[in-house]
Amino acid sequence: MSATPAAVIVAIDGPSGTGKSSTSKAVAARLGLRYLDTGAQYRAMTWWMLNNGIDVSDPSEIAAAADKPAIVSGTDPQAPGISADGADASVPIRSQEVTAAVSAVSAVPEVRTRITDLQRTIAAGTQEPGDAGTGIVVEGRDIGTTVLPDADLKVFLTASPEARAARRSGELKSADGKAHADLAATQQALAARDKADSSRKTSPLKKAGDAVEVDTTELTLEQVIECVVTLVEKASADKAGRMEKAAR
Ligand SMILES: Nc1ncnc2c1ncn2[C@@H]1O[C@H](COP(=O)(O)OP(=O)(O)OP(=O)(O)O)[C@@H](O)[C@H]1O
Ligand SMILES: Nc1ccn([C@H]2C[C@H](O)[C@@H](COP(=O)(O)O)O2)c(=O)n1
Image (cartoon, rainbow, N blue to C red; front, side, top):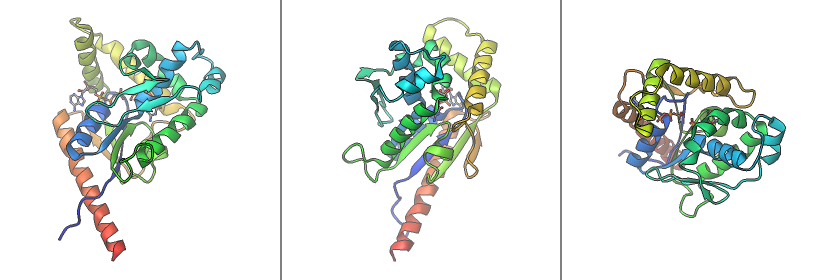
């Protein structure tokens, strides 16, 4: 008889616009797992700094302020939510101003240490009663390499620059109601953010050696979700099998 599925820790990394958030939320909702958007945490830190007069072009000012705001992330995949010092940050963290500054803020080691500690506490489930021993899907840039190197499953999503820009400008179009977002400008902005995120010294965007790479360029979102659900179910069954064997 097969073992009951085990609670799993899933790391989903990749560049911007590859589908990490959409996929992670849907997979977590389907499998009854918690969900953590780590990009939202870096964005909330950036938003707080912009609102509190921190010069985000000065790494030493960023470092000195890194331990100041209380960043609280929800883990419900249907309504994750995020706040900074008690203020709801869910909407403003998606502004152009925050997007333009977040790579600089997230490159500062003191910021990364602070946010990484938070991420590990949330993943361990020790923050909220009832979370301990429950699984989670954590998405970001360095989850498989640095934050949760012992994750039960690591997935690295990719997509061509053209596909990613088309997805993003579709999003911008629906947000501002204008007929066309500038595709070339969107592609350029994505490339600049990828370059900054993958070339920083501390914990850059990188595929973990043991991650499963999924190229989403030619896949619909639903196909990507199906693919990752299958990978998670297998990782969960394998883990349950190992636990059962160890208990014998
Ligand atoms: N396979 C896909 N096919 C078509 N559209 C997709 C696919 N995956 C995601 N999308 C769409 O692309 C957009 C970006 O997706 P999403 O926000 O999930 O990417 P992301 O990797 O989390 O980006 P970021 O790191 O910038 O937050 C969304 O509008 C989403 O619906
Ligand atoms: N684990 C992570 C997650 C995010 N970041 C930084 C780099 C991104 O450009 C930025 C915003 O992320 P997004 O909301 O676009 O997923 O946050 C990081 O450094 N490490």
